[in-house]
Image: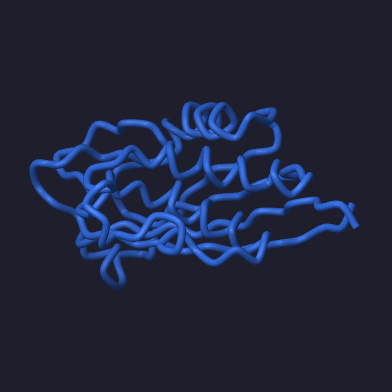
Amino acid sequence: MIPRIGTGFDVHALAEGRPMILCGVTVPHELGLAGHSDADVGIHALCDAIYGALAEGDIGRHFPPSEASWKDADSARFLRHAAERIAARGGRLANADITIICERPKITPHAPAMRARLAELLGVSIDLISVKATTTERLGFPGRGEGIAAQAAALVLLPG
């Protein structure tokens, strides 16, 4: 198997009247994330990392935000598709690492549930999935509480 690494990044603004969904888990918070779909930055970054490892573009190529059918879509559907693309190529996910970048909400209490949900969606063992968080020390848009960002890396093994 040939190792292929991909990286992903996503950002969404905070918004009133929307749920806060991160890595497939609803997190209690007074604000949610604005976006065409459910705006799950963790899953979106991970999808981009997987598509990058496969050299298959990004999430927007597979699920264009210009299409009304993806309005308010559950991002779990996007991640399942990314997992299906790995399988279609005869590969497997070796591991994935996601970092959520925000001041609030605090991610650490929710990280075990996030890891479990991502592992379930990808059909892999939880020990292959890492979810962690950092702040920007109150700098930039995450520090001002305007949005949340996520970055991800995925190692995919493909047949040679």
